[in-house]
Image 1 (cartoon, helix red, strand yellow):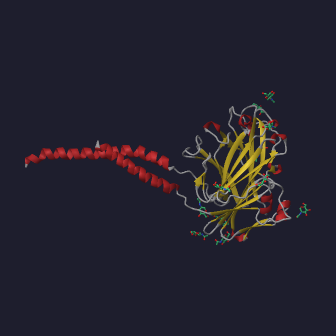
Image 2 (cartoon, rainbow, N blue to C red; image 1 turned 135 degrees about the vertical axis):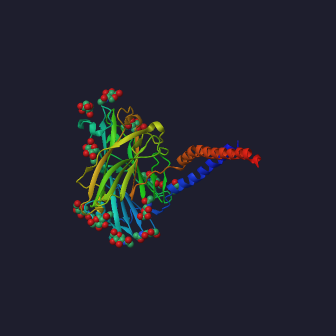
Image 3 (cartoon, rainbow, N blue to C red; image 1 turned 180 degrees about the horizontal axis):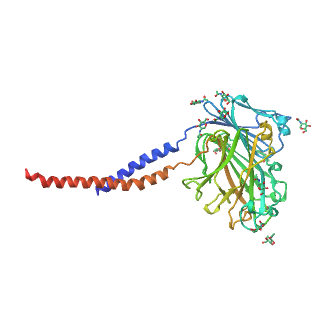
Length: 407
Ligand SMILES: *[C@@H]1O[C@H](CO)[C@@H](O)[C@H](O)[C@H]1NC(C)=O
Ligand SMILES: *[C@@H]1O[C@H](CO)[C@@H](O)[C@H](O)[C@H]1NC(C)=O
Ligand SMILES: *[C@@H]1O[C@H](CO)[C@@H](O)[C@H](O)[C@H]1NC(C)=O
Ligand SMILES: *[C@@H]1O[C@H](CO)[C@@H](O)[C@H](O)[C@H]1NC(C)=O
Ligand SMILES: *[C@@H]1O[C@H](CO)[C@@H](O)[C@H](O)[C@H]1NC(C)=O
Ligand SMILES: *[C@@H]1O[C@H](CO)[C@@H](O)[C@H](O)[C@H]1NC(C)=O
Ligand SMILES: *[C@@H]1O[C@H](CO)[C@@H](O)[C@H](O)[C@H]1NC(C)=O
Ligand SMILES: *[C@@H]1O[C@H](CO)[C@@H](O)[C@H](O)[C@H]1NC(C)=O
Ligand SMILES: *[C@@H]1O[C@H](CO)[C@@H](O)[C@H](O)[C@H]1NC(C)=O
Ligand SMILES: *[C@@H]1O[C@H](CO)[C@@H](O)[C@H](O)[C@H]1NC(C)=O
Ligand SMILES: *[C@@H]1O[C@H](CO)[C@@H](O)[C@H](O)[C@H]1NC(C)=O
């Protein structure tokens, strides 16, 4: 009986040390002080078109500041600017910015403190009739595509609430003028984070204080075909001297995103080094219900990166980037071949992307997995060790009893 007690104690020890190790391993304690403001410095008579807004999120570090700017004047875009100063500030020349006519109306000052900047722009929503059920825009004849919805032409609903400073979340919903959007909308939920963690809602991406998240969903849109599927086109704009690459990495456990073992990341790195300075990261999964269960997940795929020569029609990008930015684009398409569920079946699809600076967050073994490993390995190990000691002690005792009487 005591052998089991000892092995139980041993595995308990493994569990305690294992989980402590797990916490250390996942432990990213870096924090930023986050504050949000809307339309900084905008005063009448200048005003943005109805529904358009510029959100500025400032993430203050110990000796640096990370600025995130989200704006839906033109195609919706998220701009990240990192500075090595705690005093850096966003300056806008509003009349010029609103006009979208020339660059330089948005600056982060002092400009010498800017170390890295990059933007993500959602440009178009493609819809195609997937008669062959390939769920792959690249294998679909051009004639099956409907005219794309240009996100720069969307009308956004008025943001009628003040910013919630405690949860750092803003939701923007917009629609196209056409009949398909009578009951439909495309929404963006923007979140900024003070520290590392995960959102409860799938795909529960791991985030940190150097990243922000955009959840995009398309709800209630009347599809133009019986077998309609959608693809979202987005572009990345960056400083010259950087290049991009999309990697697909294997993820080690699916505890947070059931059935998905991959993570895709579009990293940006300087020409003479391979370390990432900025990234967009997503899991190749979309959800077909607002509150999904396992069956509502559908894989998604990305097309190869293409170089784009025209600056995307976003006020933010046109105002900030001056000399010859690098622009690349790709499409994210939702669904997989032979998938019997089309958009018309649920009229909903959502997809989530994380954008940030530095190396993209990577899943480590979670505490739960470490406990499972510790119990799995610890128990047999404990039995072997304790068993060995037991046998050795028994041997000593029998030897003793044989040789002792000779004296
Ligand atoms: C920023 O602060 C950290 C910790 O206080 C320090 O290690 C680092 O050298 C500082 N960086 C700069 C650029 O001053
Ligand atoms: C806006 O742009 C138009 C032409 O593109 C120009 O005529 C007008 O003066 C500009 N307005 C401002 C306030 O810059
Ligand atoms: C901030 O970055 C700029 C440009 O990279 C550099 O010239 C400057 O020395 C840096 N300042 C600090 C305090 O690190
Ligand atoms: C369906 O597949 C066939 C054969 O691969 C191809 O020739 C055709 O263009 C496809 N149709 C569409 C609409 O993609
Ligand atoms: C905005 O909020 C005010 C007061 O809360 C309300 O009267 C108004 O109808 C709202 N406007 C819209 C467009 O929701
Ligand atoms: C702000 O967000 C927090 C956390 O989600 C919530 O508890 C609070 O009610 C929100 N406040 C307002 C004014 O919406
Ligand atoms: C929009 O919703 C209303 C009520 O739910 C419905 O009667 C109408 O047919 C819908 N329109 C479209 C274009 O789906
Ligand atoms: C976030 O950025 C800060 C400042 O550049 C850096 O010290 C920290 O290591 C970064 N954290 C992660 C998880 O990359
Ligand atoms: C779409 O489905 C409806 C009803 O199932 C059918 O009447 C219609 O012909 C179909 N349209 C096409 C283009 O296949
Ligand atoms: C890249 O090259 C430039 C000049 O050639 C140099 O100043 C810079 O430090 C290099 N960066 C890295 C990360 O090696
Ligand atoms: C996205 O897909 C559409 C349709 O196949 C194509 O015309 C467009 O060029 C693609 N965009 C990018 C950035 O690859």
